[in-house]
Length: 115
Image 1: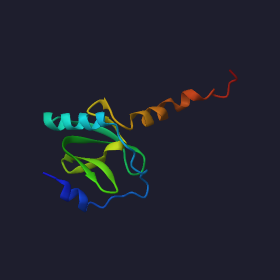
Image 2: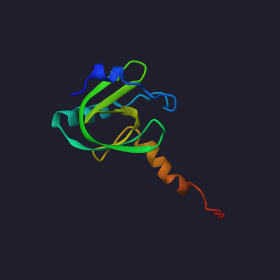
Image 3: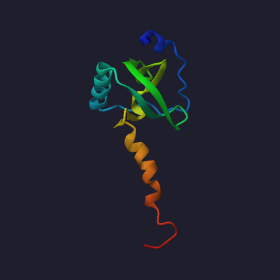
Image 4: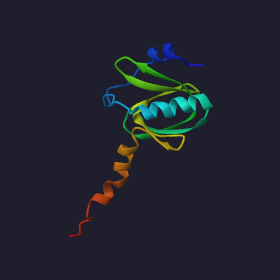
């Protein structure tokens, strides 16, 4: 099992990451509920290069790392910053609106036609 001591020893690749954004408490509650249930599934998120990525596993803890933000720790060994999660086991996460705005961006143009 991984824990906070392992998380603190990881080499965080923050050069391309945005600064940590505060996350509504409801998302923390969702994570804590999934930890209690022992849910295993897929999480979609923006990786360090701001590209949509996914990981399948079980959340084992939610940890705050000074200067880096809140992270979920998964089994098998993986960590994801909480504010970059798009969906967590099919439920919208903190970064869902950001992802959705990319998907709807094309709908904002007129495609070269006058309206």
